[in-house]
Image (cartoon, rainbow, N blue to C red; front, side, top):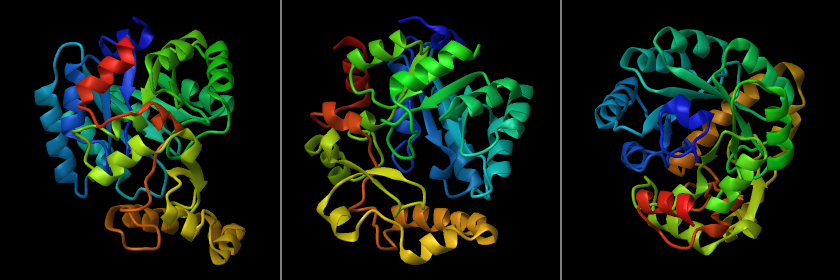
Length: 316
């Protein structure tokens, strides 16, 4: 399973443990590195810059041969901490940064100066070509089977489209829950995969046992799209509570989102509210009952240590 991604990150298997809001943590990524893959944590998982700095230092100390670690940055205006988070990561160091939801130009320029690679989430060819032009080291093809904020194209269509056109490596994100899925993505032209949802039900994941068990009990048919968390369509498990509150944005949000001058600010405010709601159970959609996941939980049959999940992904 040696590919351009394994060469880029000096890892054993072409797998990135995807960054997941509130789920990913140092323990998960440390175990991922030990098992020969790369692990990534959203910078937004840390309330303060000092906590982010400590996490980066801990992972730097924990790094082992054959493993790699990085952080995910939201690079648009909704993330008011973005510039300072980038500064901290460049000062402490990491192997790679994954950018989402905005232009990666500033991140690429700053990270490359200190030897950090930058991979960029893309959902279409236009943005794939843009990030390549800006100097990205790889494009992460977020398809319509990804968990959380997903793309619109199928894994095959998006991966083939990007890999046939771009010269930088393409990493397929979405729809991977077993080794057969990895083999399929590689056959489409991907140089690696980004895997998130199967790791929610890991012993090391920083979420409740109820959330982990939900990923075992529910399957692909139970994943639905909701606008109630961040204002942007997001995949969640269709629990009775989700069914009760619905998945559509409110009438007021719908009206405001159609207002050209207010749309940007509404999205920024809704993003902030949604992230706090997910963490603190402070609004209608609470963290205890609205669980983000993708259809690849179909293959999650038990709560396991990270190392065992990786063994299944690389050997089954």
